[in-house]
Image (cartoon, rainbow, N blue to C red):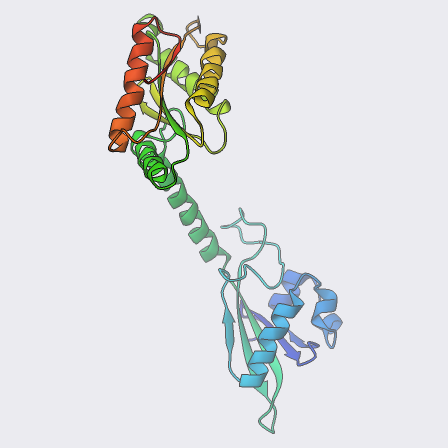
Length: 302
């Protein structure tokens, strides 16, 4: 029964010499029981974490009680290749491990038994579910077309930056920009071409920002950027760089190459706005002024 069971069974003495090694272990390791008997386990499996396993076995022997480790704590003890057809996506076999004390006739623990359970199917399913949940969480925070933060998530960051300014007083700027004459793009070239232009604007803006900056799609063809630890002049330089990059580029769509421009408004936060919505209103007023003054430019609020 021990030879046919689909569980790895290894008996070690307290010096980690192998006393028993069943068929499961032979099949997955490629090492026969006769070859490994009385050999120190770590000599043939140098990848096994020796200090960790020694602590576990010492505790089992001292307390004369079992110890259990799941794949979530340590994916595997023996680095066996995954040979299960259902879970072929994983490189290695995920394992649960039970370490049991074996006592001699005098009642003292003389050996330990390692039972190695192949839980690759369970582990793979759980990992796939976790990845799916992570992706769903990401999708709930991002705009599907551009991959930028969606409006709700971005507005929460604006609120957080507003509160950070009230606490620490560091310079920070808010930027609102949108695509000039975007309706004409849709009317002349179609909505798919319009989507390409929106994606292009998002990519250009993102590529010209720092890691600490936060950009979101506010709605339609309008975008917002939070520039922490940045004064109005520093923000204006960043915005001009984005504006010029867009002006000088061409979007190759399926209908025709499209050139376009953006108008940009920005507001450095002061003590005047009572909340983050008022701060956003200031940036929006600067954007309106940029539109009114001829478009394709950057206007600083105030």
